Image (cartoon, rainbow over all chains, first blue to last red):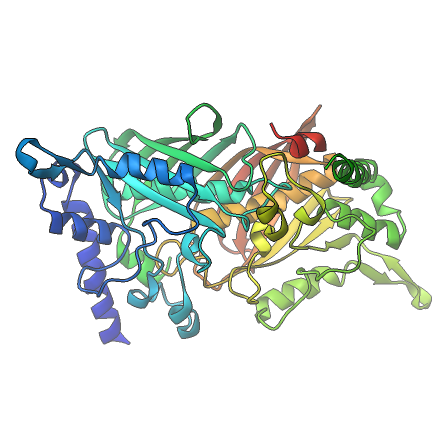
Length: 253
Length: 253
């Protein structure tokens, strides 16, 4: 157990170090491989693992609006320069996986059974398009994160519309990833969501996260959810994240 | 289409009427059958339907803490009086189903494919214990709602712990049901959650919702999430709900 914990702590030390060391300025000029390591680390997946499925890539369930927005941002991840040379663009796509727990027991409370089966909440269903289809992009220069989200039919709250909790979940996912890039490992301390307009099931949405301010261990972020063409504001929200030591997760609170 | 819409509107008029007419004072003295109709209406299920699965009843995945708390509240739903006569107690269990959309098209945006497959977000997985296991109880005299929640292994956020969005979802579910009892059909206008302490996966929690105030079409509710023994505060939150006309859902916003 102690040996196992030591190995896991090592893995998370690596995660924490990577997340905090690869700050946005160095990120923008970093090599492709460092970007990959960084992105994996941010999503909690150590770099020494074999390639798992990246859920942020298009699949057959993505509708035309989802594809249009994906291509819009993805085309700005790598720019073709004069002479045909390729260079990193202002945006980067953030890979997304569905597991943490193979590599982290998650505290003394967690049974082995739960340990082996645990999956990230937003990636816990195999059926494409049924729940959360999303991809995140980060712009280091503008300190912005954008999520493109297609709301599946298993996210119902009010009849025919997306559950308020599912919307909060996507907001937390986007602003959490953003805060993690800016400050390393963090946890949500506050999430304040104003629901302005109902979201019909099946909609494609844009979730824009912007840095408000950083104060010591705190990161304040604002976020808005709009229709895919930006014409309708569905929610606006604020979030506060605080930095956390990985040992806090492993050893319980 | 028009005929279908008319039938659906009728169903929802019934839902809206029941939810608003059966207010807490009359509820406490109402007959068992009215209570059943009321509870179904609150969860969006017209009373003329055959019995679907009630997800708020115990299943094999419920742990000892979940069962203990269930029995604690359930035993106060029906009290045995002197002489063996049974009488309604201060609490009532609220049934919980996984479908709205068979009976509500959910607006002009919703395709037939989504329509037929849609499921309530918190009841969208068949595997018992994997995500949200919960049961809600309502106390009309105290104007309180209590949710007992067991967090499954597919709700992961931080390694080994429950996703902030999953916690927000359960809070929204409990306070939303509470607001619906108090004011009829409502939607969430604001949800403000302070995350005080991480929640390990597998935990059983108590979610207590209390009426703060009512103002015209607005209902203000406060809510806290604690460990099953009440010793640890995990989150505290406030929520604002506003009354909504069912036609708003059916015809889009």
